[in-house]
View (tube, rainbow, N blue to C red):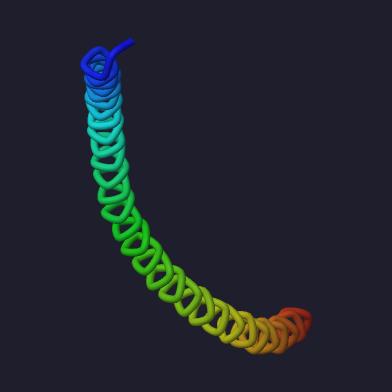
Length: 110
């Protein structure tokens, strides 16, 4: 093989290598684009999740506030019920005394 053939052979090998590298680069570009698309989809999902999380936090805050109001209402109701029970005992005591007096008076001859 003479020098020209060697050089020609080297150039052909280089051309093959360059073609292979171009193919590899094209494949890598496609892979990078696929990764970018996947990342964009992940970012979109993350954005939606952040919005949903904010909504859940808002609902949790409202629920907490309502629960606090219900606890306060329940405590007030319990206090009022206790007061009514005590007042009912007093009324029952008074009625009991009056009932005794009425029955005693009914037994007396007129």
